[in-house]
Image 1 (cartoon, rainbow, N blue to C red):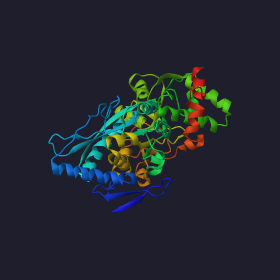
Image 2 (tube, rainbow, N blue to C red):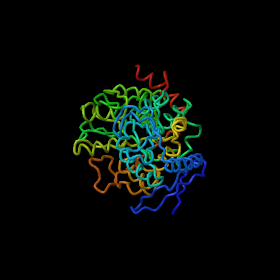
Image 3 (cartoon, rainbow, N blue to C red):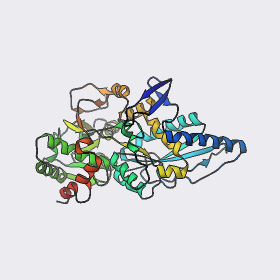
Image 4 (tube, rainbow, N blue to C red):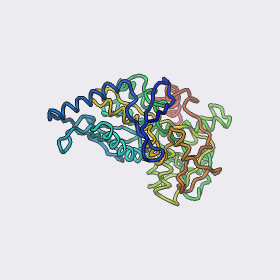
Length: 410
């Protein structure tokens, strides 16, 4: 057995990984939460007692979207009896943001197998996807999620502010509860007919831009902040930056509610000249439509840090605390990190990250590299701390009446 120490604020959490037959793959042997340990033991004892007595229980069935769907989930997380009557199925609901559909479709399969091997109990995961900001409000207003895997810390904070997530969620998991990261790139049509290479090209009068709405989409907030950082680096004053951002949004053809909707507008509906995209969305477009699109990596962008959290009030109600904690813990296993990278997210484990780095001096990517190395490690990235953290960034840029409203209303 080997132990990997992941950096985090409290500096006292370990993830134990069993050696796995697949090179570079590992599985957590047990959860990392102190709060989960007692719950885990109680679950196992209860399960054994029920099996010995021939007893069983049943609960509500999760209603909502399967992986790839976009509707909400209902009263998920209750145990339901399996078809053969032997044991119970634990139901978890993961409320996530738009572009993670393919990732969690793959991840849920390996987690369900891993968890059954670990505990002897079956688990089924239901997905709900949509714009991250909208998803956060849905959970806050009653959509029962056992876990949230949203586009940014600020959206998880919205759920925490509603009283559903305990304080300190950012330090509950390694690397600030961000098992994978991403960045913002441009997707253009083959040959880049409008010659779009950097953020300054987005404010030209002949360019049509596709980006989601920052009021409903976490990815759209990242887009906005990356653009702001570029114009700031050009030496513009705040007044000049606001004017540049105003021009950029003046070129927006359609403001979709989420990242996947924006991709549909650009790729399937043929709208606009450039899509401001999550890195994984752009690569999926290259994969699904070979030869039709190109990725342009701008000179600067932003490190996007999606954040995961257990929705404590819901898991306590459903009795799914341990399973939910292990679901998020397993995202840091080698096996899961490889799946994240294969779905074009940047893994948090450095050794696995390094395996996917692309050695190139070009800022244009025309196809998925045959060797699987796709991460452009040379792009200059700022992060949310440059904007004072999400509380300050949201207040200044995205709250009602803040800069984005002022810009877009004009």
